[in-house]
Length: 380
Image (cartoon, rainbow, N blue to C red; front, side):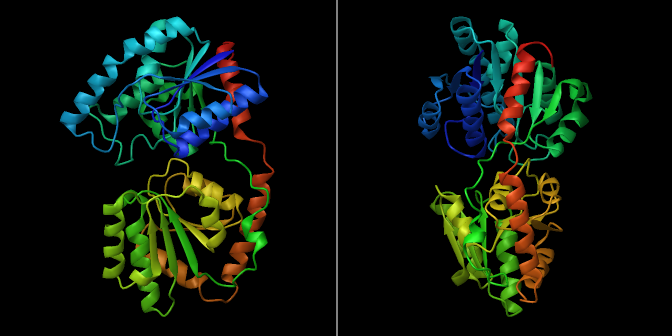
């Protein structure tokens, strides 16, 4: 089978890393031929080449994004529509057996596949209805209904995302599958390779600096902990450019914890951060899945997460603690785990048990590719 994956980005963020895992499964394990279309050149291209994919650059625009005000969003959606013939011509030349769109924000490949009569699957990796960074000229519920109507199959990455899609497009139910992203297992949980501190002292939070990711709540909670006599160190990784780092530092100084907060623009090695930290913070209020949450748990590092989005369903399996989504509740939890009375030891041991479970579970990439094979054969 020849599969064309349509990527919305050529970077190496969570969705793109999950795509590489799917391509590896399809090529190396199942023996399929895979082509991936990218909107431009970027680091994803080299990763795809390593796992045996052909890569073609087909420029397009997104119909959802952080800066999609009504005017900008209308222009971007029109530009995405204009790129549909480019995808249609590629489909006519390449003749793939199946098209897989890797994100809800890029419509051109799915529309072209429908026009060309090629079977297709659309993957939704975003909190489609609630993420404040997904703005568009079209109403979100309209976009959800379009996504549900065009493909032969729909994959969502969590029950949380499934609930959002079905609330807008109940007709998607029969062709909907929940398949979590594939996360590579760790050779050995990092927490098992260092003595436990007995109490919480070091925290890490990964993600761009936005209100959605909760860095401001983390810094405010650190200030509350310091005033209670419990200084905690926090590393913020992947916050973005210099302006974002300066904003983070200014906020840390405002709360009196400038000496306890370290911010970096990016990290190529999140596992080193999980190894350094006693716990990982996941403070997004609209997390569609939470790759960081799973990576941290697989590393044996517990997660302190907001009771929101898909974080709830991941931490329901153990290895972390859920708190109400506000800085005061977060601070209370941090103080309890920093007290040194055994609470953190119990949490750390639970995280090690969860790490063993996750690292020995079969890869979800296999389930995803099996679903693609079912769609191609008309069995799904």
